[in-house]
Length: 516
Image (tube, rainbow, N blue to C red; front, side, top):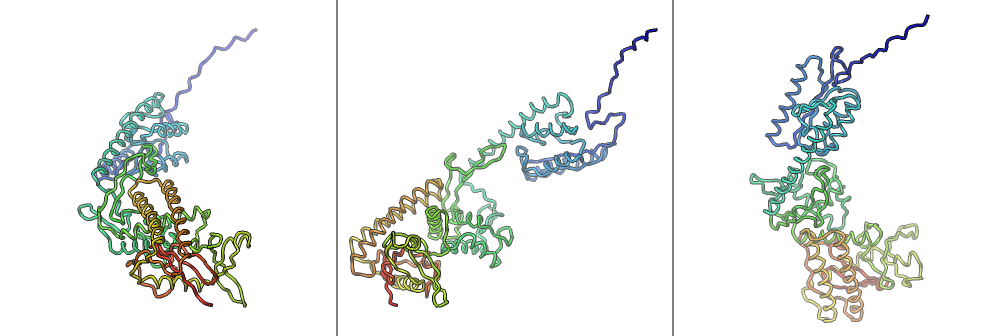
């Protein structure tokens, strides 16, 4: 007998609860977290921040079947950039580790103002069956229509953020135009603010700033200065013992130590990523003179800027190889035009320091026929002797031909000084300034070579361009110091193994000879 065909049946499998993968009938405890955020640290926002945290803690504790997984919060940060929100990132990490089943938050704008970040995060959580519930919009991300609403509303939140950013930027630029300075004095060595918000000098910190400028001007590197401050127990503005060379570098370029202020040095490129870029003319800049009391004099400040340019120029010229000896790059061979190098020689089992022509060392007599080897002790005596001779001379030389060349050299120095001033005021892009400096410096060097040749045609041993002005910021010297070379010497030429000609920065020239 044929068996009758069984009746076709359809079995219905009930859907899981949109929150967690747990049906209402078999509901277990859920690990519920809350996320709170305020975008500023203002007092009124601080109240909102505290209320949000208190509200969610109480709400989760009262709900039967809910266990508090944590209150995650970010205070004083924007919702447009995820990577700066430590609380948010920790919450997502805990979700990925299975510690959270449900996230409660006030609104979409509190959770994120960047549409891409929001949707990426929600989809990541959704793939793990973790729901986010936005109370203001009444959206559960595990609902079918949730993502469409989220896309529309988050785009609106992002647009609101853009408008807010534009309004803030407009407000800041209005302050710049009025010359209103915005400085975080807590992170600014040398100054604090008085009750009226004006910058006031902190004497102890100002001494550190002056030491930094002085040490750099006499030839030390930023790394050396950082070590020096640490060794002498000088603390940073944050009270730390460790100094960084980059901090020293920024201090040396900060026009506020001059009593001035350059506004809008940087600007925000993208309000979403908060990426900032140096303002190379894309936006207006504002330079305020005599804004507050200076810590360093105008003379010292601009001398430091000139020294920075000079070091950058020689680093590029010498393929980035800095020298620890101030005489290097200033001592020249009058035969081939190359620099002299410091060399250690051994004789009679003793070490002797001498200076020799670089071209002669590397190539023998192919490019340089001069055999001049100058003992360092004699070179130091010659520099000190030349400095001592012209220090107190009050009259100028009367060789018209030399004076005309020296005047042209002085004009080139004025051109460089003017460019440095303009750079401090924000008119130059650094690479353009370096190119300009290199051109003018080459002209200056050619004129100095011409001055040397004309000077050698005469019989005098001293040419005084103008009386030597001793810099009062530094102590008087009673012997040779490396500082002398950095502060006052422009160039040294070897004429013979026992004779040099020294060009000083004020345009004066001295022939110095010694006997063995």
